[in-house]
Amino acid sequence: MPTTTTQRVCVYCGSSPACDPAFLQGARRLGEVLADAGLTAVYGGGGIGSMGELAEGVLSRGGRIVGVMPRFMVDLEWAHTRLEELHLVDDMRVRKHQMLEGSAAAVALPGGCGTFEELMEAITLKRLGIYLSPIVLVNQRGYFDPLIEMLERAAAENFMAQKHLQMWSVVERPDDVPAAIADAPAWSEDARRFANLRDQA
Image 1 (cartoon, rainbow, N blue to C red):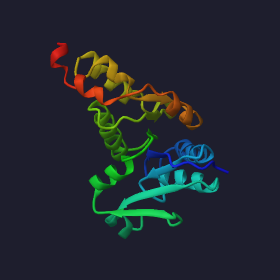
Image 2: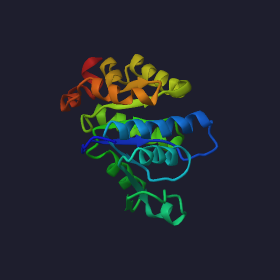
Image 3: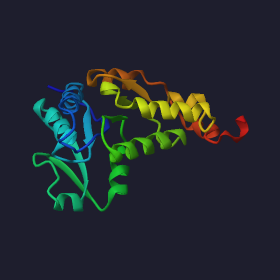
Image 4: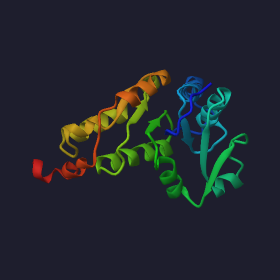
């Protein structure tokens, strides 16, 4: 059974059930891992694809999972039907804010354009010293390799500083997520001082 804690982990993941089953299995395993670690998972509230598997993983271990979903998605019957906590919001922007606000970490599983957009917003907020918690990419089957390469290219071309590459951690297995959160380099509001690179040219 999970230990008692109030720490929330925001999880970004996809809703497609048509992806490789390995990604769905990874999402379910992450749910189990977070529950076993006594962490509360906060996610988009969906009941299919990686979202659904994440929720099933948490619930199978008796853990706590919180869904955040725009009302129009509930109307389309996209919500997981067994969540004890499902927060309904007006739109996608409010959803992203509620998912990330107060979280002890943000974790990205493989997903589509929505996952990319949520992840990049978290990274941007961390660069600006607004979001200070760890960000972890679960890089199953090298899924995030192109994105990581693009971010490294941005630093190489001086659109970001080399120190910005410390804003996220990369793991290959869901089991490694709690350790990655615990071992993430500290980040502070001082990041605002080097968010603009004009003085580093």
